[in-house]
Amino acid sequence: MELSSREAWTVIHGLVLGTLFLLAFAGGLAGLWSLRPGLITTAGIQERMKRLYWGTWVMAGAAWATVITGTWIVYPWYRANLSEVGDDRYAGCVGAILPNETCSPREFLLSDVSGQTETWHELGMEWKEHVGWAAPILATAAAFLVTYYGPRLMARPWLRTAVIVMFVAAFGAAVVGGAFGAFLNKVAPIV
Amino acid sequence: MTDRHHDERIAPELEGLHLPTKPDGPGAAAMLAAGIGIFVLGLMTTFNEVSEGLHDFLQSFEMGRGVGPLAGKTIVAVIAWLVAWIILAAIWRGKEMNIKRVFWIGLILGVLGGILTFPPVFLAFA
Image 1 (cartoon, one colour):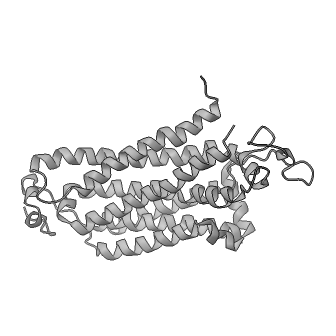
Image 2 (cartoon, helix red, strand yellow):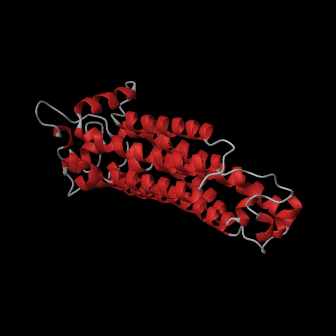
Image 3 (cartoon, helix red, strand yellow):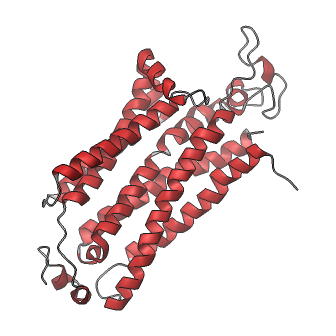
C-alpha cells in the first residue's frame, strides 16, 4: 500500500485540504447563521465568536493552500507536453486508455483517444483552474469581516447576510474546483 | 456605551460586552477589494485569449515551473486584490461608509469576474 509523490500531492491538494475547507465552511456557516439576537447569552457570544474566528480563518487558509498546491505543484503535471512527435501533437497518446509517461492528462483529454473527452479539459479544467482562485480571496475577505465586526454582526442582519453571501460564494467557487477535480482525476488521473 | 449603529437596542446581549464603536470603512474596503481581485482575475483570463503579448507576459510569471499563463493571471489578480485592499483601507480608515452600496459594487465586480472565468465566455475571444 503506497502512494507515489504525485498521488500524494493530489491527495493533499484535493482530499486533505478539501476536507479541511469543507469542515471549516460547515462550522463557519452554522456559526454565522445562528449569530442572531435572542439565541445566545452574552457569555455564549464570546465562546461562539472564538470558534467563528478559527473556522473562518482555517477555511481561508485551507483555500489558499489548496489553490497554491493545485496551481504550482499538481497543475504542471496535468499540462505537461509529452506526446508531441513531429507535427503530430498527440502521437504519444495513440492507443492510450489512461494518461501515461508519453501522454499527460491534458493531452489525453484533448486527443479524444478514449472517447469524447475534450470537453473535460475545455470546460472542466479551464473553469476549475481559474474560478478556484476566487475562493481564497472571498474566504479571506469574509474572515476579515467576521474578525473586524465580531459580535456586532449579530445586531446588523444585513451585514451578516452580506458576509454569508461572500462565505457561500467562496464555497461555490471551491465546489466548482473540487467537483471537476474529482471527475478529472477519474477520467484522466495524474500518474 | 451606545454604538452609532445602536447595536445594543437590537441585540441586548451585546450590552454586557461593552464593544467599542467600529466604523464601516475597513469592512467596505475588504468587500470592494475582493470584488476588484475577482474582476481582475476574470479580465486577465479573457485578455489572455485576446492578446498574444499579454499571454507571453502572464506566462513569464511561471518561473520555469510549467504552469503557463495561469501563473500570471492569478499572481496579477492577487496583487490587484491586495493593493486595492491596502489603498482602500488607508483611504477609508476610521470613516463611516455606505457599506450596502459598496457591497453591491463589489458583488457586481465579483459576478462579472466570475463570468469572465467561465470557459464558454473567455474562449469565445480566443
